[in-house]
Amino acid sequence: MQASLRSLGPVAGGPATVVGALLDALGGPPDGTLVAYTATPENSDTSRLAARLTEGLSPAEAAEHRARMPAFDPGRTPSSPTMGALSEEIRTTSGARRSNHPQTSFAAVGPLAREVTRTHDLDCHLGQASPLGRLHELGAKVLLLGVPLARFTAFHLADLRMPDLRRRRYGCVVQDGSGGGRWVHFEAPELDDLHFPELGEALLREGTGLRRGPVGDTDALLVPMAEAVAVAIRSLLRDRSPQPV
Image (tube, rainbow, N blue to C red):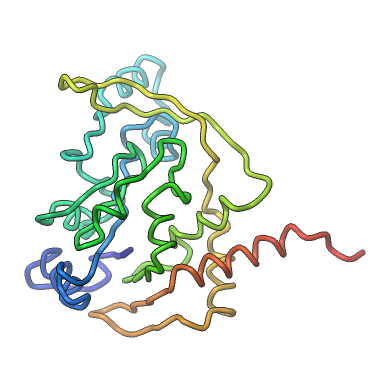
């Protein structure tokens, strides 16, 4: 699920009501598994958010900001406010499991929660060795509630299958086991979503399994992940094909 609680309009009971309704629609936790992205870019010195938060700071101020960054603990660290209230509600739902990636974690509730979240390689933010990749393998569907296809996270799976991947260095602070934090740095493919609007348009043109309907004050779009990734791969490969002169 990728959702904007604000877009739904007033909801009695707030995020808990929405998450409960989604679990009911899946048949309840014994039958259906609900997953949300619970990323934490605030604990990084290489994320886009980190760059915005330190823009204009002096070297001393930037160093102080870095020293205050929260160390990631999968069991305790809240998801970023940029992820929205519904992602945090899923993370804190009884029985939820969370992947251990310090930047791009996912939380899940339901019978497949452990299977979805157990593997999340450090150098695989949003690829096949992440919960996103496992969801793709399992034939998951993505529910967009008030969120445009321009923010469809699973498009990264298509990007990461391209032959011309660029890599970069990432850094983030994690719990060191004694209540403190330690910095980890690693190389991984560079992630970018600036082209996602074009991929979304391609999916609307070529996709056949999408379902749309109203929910509260917004539109809901249910997207088969495998189809969306396949359409995105075709679109990306077309863009890379030599054009006739």
